[in-house]
Amino acid sequence: MGENRTTKQAKDPRANVTAAVGGRLGNRIKRAEQALIARKTQALRPFGLTVPQYSVLLLLSLFPDGMSAAQLARESMVTPQTMSTVLANLEKHGLTEREPSPLHQKVVVNRLTRSGRAALKKADKEAVRVEDGLRAAFTPEEFERFEDYLERAIDVLNGTG
Image (cartoon, rainbow, N blue to C red; front, top):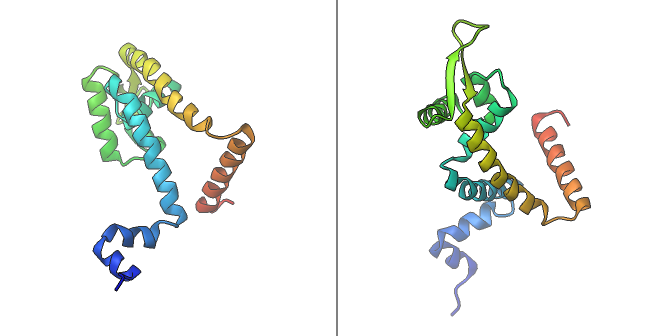
């Protein structure tokens, strides 16, 4: 007569995935991260920047003496290989420059160019607008609790909470 739930799940593999992981906290956190990255990607596209490129420009703006590729990779939470590609593309477009470190012979330091600063100034307004849009979905009290919960989750997962 009617199809049972198991039969429906077998016909639609996505139903199996949703049933297995849909309610897991890690899945929800990942979905929120992906939604944020998707919105930032859309906001940064008119400036010809990806989210990792924007992150590097932002970091370099905070460190006027520059940063090594290894430092940038750690701070951006990407692999050194990914950072190498990001930096090559930024340099190719004249947004960053590399030069030997005055402190360490074997270290190359990356810095923003004037064009990189200008690009960041424009792009940052849009990236902040995305984050402000998310913040606006909460009351100030809710947002403060949300941030507290996120920090607690980070501490627990890092073994410090």
